[in-house]
Image (cartoon, rainbow, N blue to C red; front, side, top):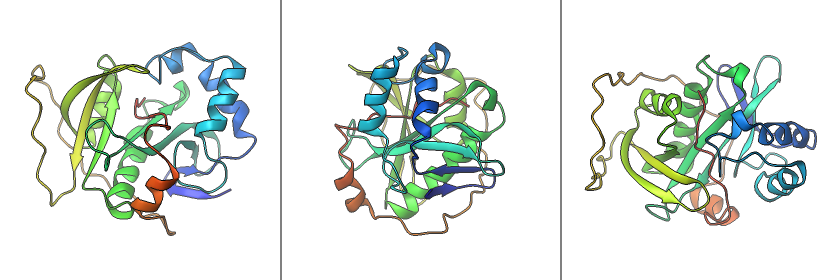
Length: 226
């Protein structure tokens, strides 16, 4: 097993052969898949083929990976960072999907903060993106807690409508939003400060990472579930 990203409570680790059945179970769940990928549950044959194409095995940090509890090793979902070419070929988006029993415990915010840290520090990103279904309010609340702000909405043939949320590196300027304004939110929560652990091992730099995973061939996993 290879450790990819670690936080005080979670490990986003490399794929192992036994993870295939677990992920097939997640992809077969209508409730889990409601806002993921195309929003339709997968049969086992389709799920196995999908996992083989998009989930790298071993310690490779590129693409989606199982998300586990650090104390017990129990799998609670998956997540990752993938190239995202909707605004720029240099962008990356992050996201995660949690099983129902793991929601409401702050895990999405915790691993989200760690992946933002990873993108800025180890991939040299100037901004991080997350894409979310417009009706997925819990996931949008997670993005707000992470300090991300709404940028615009794009229709994606394989995923349906998606809102783009962006977080710039602290020293960078915020991007200009598109002409279409977002409805006001009178109860917008405050941005919280996150304390995440720095990954204790080396990672490939952005150019090497991009060569391994082409944005047009990778699924996005940023339709997060808190």
